Length: 493
Image (cartoon, rainbow, N blue to C red; front, side, top):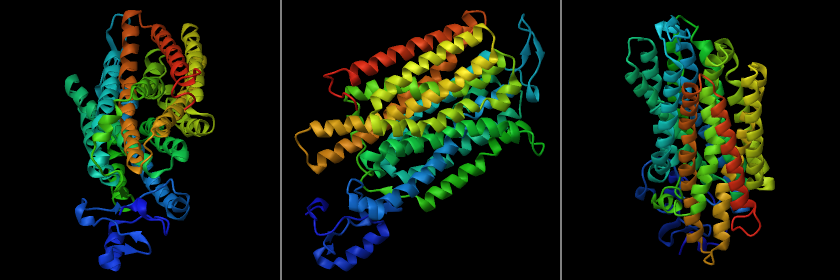
């Protein structure tokens, strides 16, 4: 007899402690109040586990599930927020490390602590941090089914001590070679990996009808860490005589606090603790790779522009003051817009919101080109803030499309057994991580495209912006072709 056989009372969530009590009370019959006693927690990893989870059941959700899901969402957001902040620390730190060079390439004035990075070196550091974060999202996706969401949140938060303390040491030693600096910047990618495990974990907690809003909030809480870091770092580096090292030191205790909160207040789901093979099976679906491509255009743009925006204000317009004071604005707007993209997708469908986002992103990119050509920093700044806002909406809508695609697959499958449904649900959670990993590669590519543009076209970023506009239009066409065109399998997901 399985949990699906029980009909005499609605299911409820069990922790491992509750499981022991219910098993004892049930005696040899193995039942309590018409329910099947959960599997003995001795057969699970030690820790705080919920043995049964059924968010699609309205009674379960209203009586218990919603409160538990909300609690886990809150502290998932806390941990992911710190992770994103650490991931993007270098985006604002490098602004203070640039040297001032004349037209002949001669150093005129060094930056903070005697550093004299060139624009190319700075963009390389940003690309490496972004790229490592993207690559780490693949193994991080598997950590939830292997270790449990709560357990891995604790570990991943503690791993953030490596990039935070490493940054603090490196920026205090200007004699450090550029190669070592690149290696330390690469460890910031540990913060980027957190996103994949966090999103995969939270996707299990919420019913399909609320995944867009829940995943949007979870992602926005992380994304906004970029803006917070870019706003807080310029302030804290001037306090207490610590200087630039404070950029890392301020986040080390916050990482520990996030780990403690996850340990005490989050849960592992028995449903998510399973063979990680469904994640591998998820990549067999061609729509997963198509969504990964679309996510490069939305999230890849968000994270790439977030990393590069302060640098562009500094090296293109010679306004480091604006970069340090207002460089956070784009990331903030994009982060706040993300959950609304999920909410709009819940209501109207993710594909139409995604298509609209790409068209508006292309329009904002064209306005940015005008701003650069006329050297209007006001127009450039406004166009980028608008671009960030639309990438945020697109982030939310593309992520809502992922569970919708697997929901459509469930509806099309003639085998409606609970085992098949659970398999596709696990594949959906795994796809979230894989897609987030591929999408984040946009953050790796964008700084290098700017670097190529500046080095190949006399310091101009206009060719780079034109490339981005073209990419947005191609992605808009793909969205229509595979998700909105009449007769397509996944129409209007």
